[in-house]
Length: 319
Ligand code: GLU
Image 1 (cartoon, helix red, strand yellow):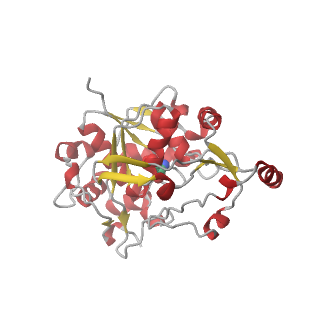
Image 2 (cartoon, protein in one colour):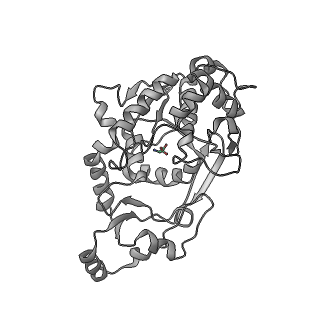
Image 3 (cartoon, helix red, strand yellow):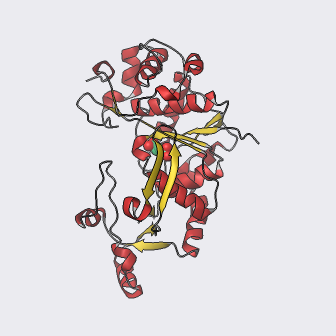
């Protein structure tokens, strides 16, 4: 049976839509539509205090302005509110309990600084592997620490290697315990963590295709592991796309206000001009010429996407 492709936009509205989000949304849209599939919009506002609703509203308007439409989800479906992660704690709680019942979670009392100070291995993508301090605590030690502060919860990752195919990176393998470590599934303030939420959501929402930044490549083995533990269907396709970087090699960040769509709109004048620039950076056009996503669709060829970080030309950086 031929399964229909379901892709997704999964922005975190902690700021406004910026160049990196637009780049990712454009490629996610092209990838799903090229396969005759649909796209859903899920607002990843887990940390509701950092992600006010106005940001999500603006983000949805911007996607529409860009011609990147979606078929399901926030601002579209009758149950639109169910596509905001901030409304889904009860759902995550259910899966959290499932892991807990399987004895796969343990409370962790370490602060971020403690984890860093413990000389945990650091990887070039910023991953810090938790050294397992709290995994080894006795019941008495746990009880004593619990009196002082509420714990976060971590998943005990197994000593196994997870392999998967990525559409751009090819065959990937990660030794879970060594290269991922025990990830947080719930923070000490009770907010569920990205790895758990995104796995539950992609599984329950029937997402079959994930297009996202290469910085999340190392999250994929953890999520595949969680899909298995939670008995949820994993996406069939993973496409980790190159990151956009400034001419000095620095990673573009949300705090660079100059990357915000509002500034780009002013500079470039039209959505088509911006789409054309991004399509060119993604290797899809020989020159940065104005084009709509729909016009780009027949030309889209994932094989042409560069396999390395993409340097954004200074014209796109309004500094
Ligand atoms: N919400 C994440 C972000 O905005 C993306 C998560 C994902 O694609 O899995 O960076």
